[in-house]
Image (cartoon, rainbow, N blue to C red; front, side):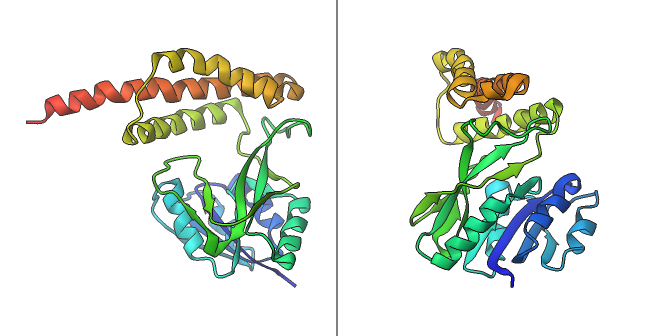
Length: 258
């Protein structure tokens, strides 16, 4: 008997991981994939699973794209995965138990980043997001350009099982993503009227490194944990540096107008 829950995924050239992703949710009633123009084998993989429906949608931004995929879900309970993520058996069991108990509205799910092919130490403090929830209680803030979160109007409980994130397969990939994401976050901050701060610019990198390496205990992940924390710190620096960059550009644009 299938799990009465819709899974929704947005994809773009996720063929390297998508088969593992879909295998982890093959027991779910339906899987909705909204693809924004893949040129790899994403479609062939998706069409080989009987519970998967894939369609094309031009890119609307992270929150916008996921909102459109969510709207296609037919079941009362929904689960969001990315095309490079795999649902753990432990979390799948929690989802089934939550649906059966029918007492809460969402699970806050730990994301286990598999950096350079190795998962986090079990003692590392993982980031967590709402990924499983009642459809009628959750929505996205469309103003968030990246790192979109589901906003739930109801009771949320932290899950014990993980979602495994495999997308950070190399240092190059992680740095490329962070460069792209920092552009979006700086633009988002600018649009929300946030001002750049020289003090924050000078402190954000060491503070973020200390938080990642010691407080979140990436130090337990060996040399990978050190590299990951350094990249995280530089990402935080880039967001602030690019916010400074936004203001001279904005002033120049105003001067250029007739």
